[in-house]
Length: 234
Image 1: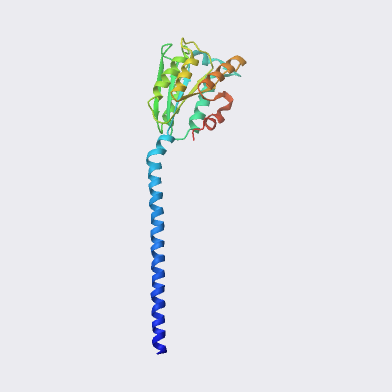
Image 2 (image 1 turned 45 degrees about the vertical axis):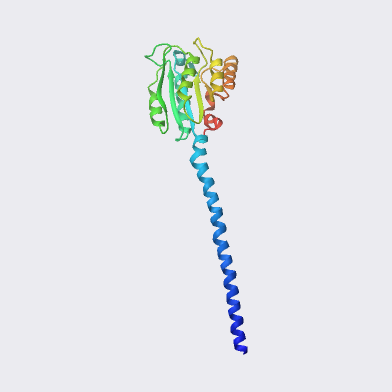
């Protein structure tokens, strides 16, 4: 009789244990599965829709290669100075950024000519660096019209848009740069400036104000290491 009772007790215990383990097994399977499904849904939404739009960055370098760039500062002409700075900027710019180069005043062009030497695209740093070596200053320096043209290059592109003007600040154009950068800012295009050559109090104030109007940053030629980090293009 006692043996039969013991067998019955063991059977009840086994049934109870089986029921307990069955419930726990279901819980272990079902809860993570629900959470995992929820996490996957969120990842798809962020990675495929939001991230590419927010992270895309476009920057066009607008380079003053007018005749005044032959002038020298401390025995170094401004064109050599600006080439050094632009090379450093290009080196620091990440590969996945759309980079373009527009030059005005280049030798062989008419006074008001502006040429998009390197159209905006990714992974074109080497092409841009080679193009820089071919530039020889000549002609005048209408800054306003060239900022306007750079804006047209950028306006239809998705993501952040930046213009980086490299100039000695001498403007021979009929269009006020202040007006242009203000309009570009309204369209989401920032204008940054690197000043080369002699930095007088007046010229510095003018270019600082221009960069401020364009919601951008102002740099001098000896701050080449700070340009890309300050513009926050990473």
